[in-house]
Figure (cartoon, rainbow, N blue to C red):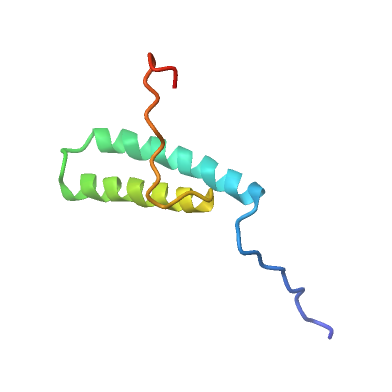
Length: 82
């Protein structure tokens, strides 16, 4: 049994540690993508690619957080108490 690498136990769901790291990186990426998108003409190829990446990233984060993929956080209007 010498020379064998240890086998890692695999899980069905992402750990809190990795989820927090992924969410942090996704937040940084979202900020940069929004900044870049503001410099582009709307509905051109690059603008559309960034827009699609936003949607895909949100869907992935929803699934990783145990929400439906198409979940959208309700808008909390300032005067609505939400």
